[in-house]
Image (cartoon, rainbow, N blue to C red):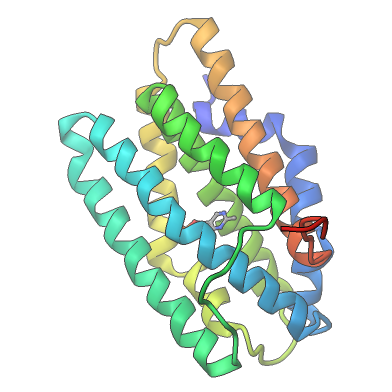
Length: 219
Ligand code: MP5
């Protein structure tokens, strides 16, 4: 039988295609993306990575003992990634203080935290795999189509590095192991969470590209 993570990906082909063809990624690769739009993503993703720390920490608390070391490493990686954002923000004059999550970023983070707290470890793990796989594939697409030198190179390199690819491969095979012999009802729940996460990822590029904002209706 096909590994579970491959089944998930093959069921999400259309969604993945839409993500990879998103103008945010295509224009980042071609160099057409406006600096303002890219900086909007930078700010929102900084918030996302900051809040991914408690998400992963709750998964760590629920994780089987043999996976704890991996989760400690994931947490440390996230902390280092915040440094990458701070360094690039300074270089490009981007403010990272007192940011407010835009509506999509806000709901995606609510979804992550509610999955971490209210669902099983495996359900949270599936969400983590989906989010990381989207980032690997998205930035790989940018790298593949890249024309010339990009001012956003450090971000492209971060999510296309060998270390990141190995980490996402590890998530995939670990998910396959954990999902083995699971009752169909539970498999269905994992499928749904995988897809929902992928849809939020699509919306995240949309949010950045359209520079989504809360309506200005008073405080
Ligand atoms: C990731 C991210 C990847 N930074 N932002 C979104 C919206 N989705 C996925 O996570 P990480 O922890 O930066 O590798």
